[in-house]
Structures are given as structure tokens and as C-alpha cells.
Amino acid sequence: MSAPLEKLWLKVVDEVSRDSQLITPRLIAVIEMAVPQGVMQETLYVEVESDFARDMIEGRARESIVAALRELSEEPITNFSIVVNPNLRDSDEIDNITSALPLVAVEPGSLKTNTGEARLNPKYTFDNFVIGPSNRFAHAAALAVGESPAKAYNPLFIYGGSGLGKTHLLHAIGHYAQGLFPGAKVRYVSSEEFTNDYINSLATNQIVSFNQRYREVDLLLIDDIQFLGGKDSTQDTFFHTFNTLHEHGKQVVITSDVPPKQLVGFEERMRSRFGWGLITDIQVPDLETRIAILRKKAAAENLGIGDDVLEYIASKVASNIRELEGTLIRVTAFASLNRVSVDLPLVQTILKDMITLEDGEIAPSDIIEHVARYFEISLEDLYGSSRSAAIATARQIAMYLCRELTSLSLPKIGQLLDRDHTTVMYANKKITDLMKERRSIYNQVTDLTHIIKKGSQ
Image 1 (cartoon, rainbow, N blue to C red):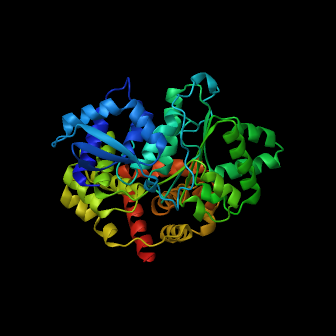
Image 2: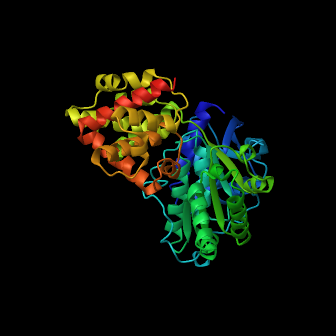
Image 3: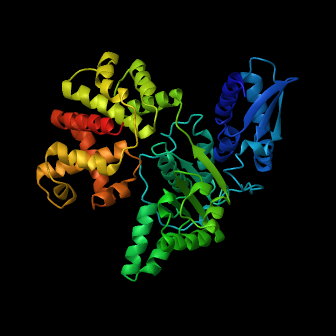
């Protein structure tokens, strides 16, 4: 696909999406996944990955797309033709995909009334998710699922590296479904939390209540499924939970760091079920997407940072979105402490040490040991229950650095330090805020980051 055709198609999608009476978000998601291939005799040829996508576009959007093409194209285009190309899907990653889906919307009355236990993060919505080539397909699939739970792809399996937006999409699906269907019963849970809840339910003889929590929902969103690997009893429980939800027409959305075939410690029956719907990945964002992410973050927090600064940060931090946003926080914290504006020379100075070090694999145990050594406290104190100000601050910095420098989830970091995941969330927010207010905290975090990264080389 040529760049001009891609730009044209994106303009067409934007133009068509303005007709909110005829074009639904789910239909837009399907159109976005189409791939324009070329123009011949004033006809644009577009490929889609299923008969369902072709029929949906032909039946509901043909006139709108033709009108948009005639208006927006620089060369004469008076028609378009859709070709089904199953090879658009990676056959090694997607074995089965739901096709011939019904075009009817979910009836709100079919969903149960209870939104109290959704556990969704209000910051993670489709509105603030930045779309780019690395995540466009995953975003479109997530939007389709949010609009029509269990009528689009079920299950939806999203995989990719840490900090690329998988959790954001999970929460966004939940928010979107609740917005369309206020009675929807949604539940978000990480695999660690699912495991701990199951173990506690067994210990307290509350397994019936456990099953009700997870098997009587309309939409189950489970994060980091890979951590169920090797946990046979918990995995068996999830297997039956999955079957119950699927058989009753309820939606399941799953994230992982690898595709189903690469999951370690899972039975084949479980991996095969993950392929019943749609498997899609999120990749490392390209430079343009990283710049767009920083622009949106800066605008949301009224930072007033110039494009040259954002482009510089985006060009130097390419590994994941979490580190990208963390770098922006580091820069603004320094500027706030020193009461100076954020400009390019300042950013180059601040990031000089950070960006000259190549990231290696950083073990969380190394972070904890470095923090203990830096603050001259024992590991027993850091792991222990002491609430003295010095030890508590060191412990919170350790949690913050584990979150920023590793791929560990909040519950996993909490387990390392024998704390609840909400404690890790609190520590992460507190250190982020303190870095903007106290020079000592900023210097400590910066020094430790440099020491830890240098030690990982």
C-alpha cells in the first residue's frame, strides 16, 4: 500500500465517520481495518480480511465512501471494489476468526444491572488512546467489541510488549460498553488478582461467591493472562469460567505479552479457546505516534511544551509508552523544581545520561537491592513493615522504579514487597508528584535510574 493511498483512506474514514446517524463506531472500526491496494480505471481496490467485513461495508457504507472518495481524491475515483484477502490475518497467530456476524446491535435490556465492581480506570478511554500504525487494528477490534459485546470478536485476545497500551484498551472497552449499555455488568481483573481471589475463596470456603463474581458478568476483561501459566488449579477454574461466559453469549477480552501459541504452562484446550475469536497485537509505536502520544499527554496536563521538545524526547525514547510518558514527567518535574521553562537545551541536558545508556533486562530484585544500598538501609527493612519516613519513602521509590523500569504489573510489584497492588498505585502517584515538588526526591530517583541502568549493561 502506498503512502498517498493510506493518507487518502484515513481522510475517507474521517469524513465518513461524521455521519453519526448512519455510520456507527463499530462500522468505522471495520472500515479502518480495510487496506487500499491501488486505483485502476477510476476504481479504488480495497482488501478486507473477511466476508463479514466486506458485507458490512457494502451494505452500510458504500454510498458514503464513494462520495468521500470523489470529494477527497486528487485523481478521479468514482467507485471502489472490495476484495476479501484472508492473508491480511497472520495465519500463525490467528487460527480462527468469527465471521458472518449478525449486524444487529446488542439489546440493552439483555444486560444485567450492576456497574459497581467494574474496577475501571477513568483515565483509560478510547478518547485519549492515540491511534497509529502499530495499534490501529487492535484499536478497531476493541472498539467493535465495546460497541457489540459478544456480537463481534469473542474472545478478543490482544498481545504485545509491556507498556504499549493493552491495559488501556481493556479499560476503554469496559467504559465504552458501559456508556452504550448502562446496565452492563463489567469486571476488569489482572490474572494475579484472579489467582489471589481464587486462593482466598478456597481458604474461606467462598468459592460459590467467587464463581458468581466472574461467571455472572456480561463483559470479563482479564489482563496479563500469561501469569496463569503453570497454575493448574487456577487455570482450570478460568477454563470453566471462560466456557460458562462463552456459552451464555458473554464477552471475554484477554491480554498477554505473547500470542496464545507461545503461552508457557497452558493446556492446549485453553490455548485453542483463545483463538476462537480474534487475536491481534500491539507493536512498539513509530516516531509519529510517539510524538502524538506526548502531544496528547502535554495538552491534557496543560504543560505548554513546544513540538521541538516533544519530537526530541520521542526520538530518544522508543521502547514503550510507559517509559515515554515517564520521561516527560521527569523533564517537567525538573523544570518545575528549578522554575524554568522547558526548552530543547534543557531537555538535552536532563536526558543526556538517560539516553546514552542502552536498556538491558533489569531484574526487580536488582532495583530493590540498589535502592537499599543507596539509602543505606537493610533489605529486611525495605521488605518489612516499618513505617518510618525514611524507609517508607525508600520503599515507595523502589515501587516507582520497578513500575518504570520493568514490565511487571502492579500486583506483581506488590507481591515482591509483600504489599497490595493499591499500595503500589499510591506509591507510584506519590513519587511522581513529589518529584515535581522536592528536589531531593527528583535527584534520588534520577541517580538511582542511572545506577540501575548502568548496572544492567
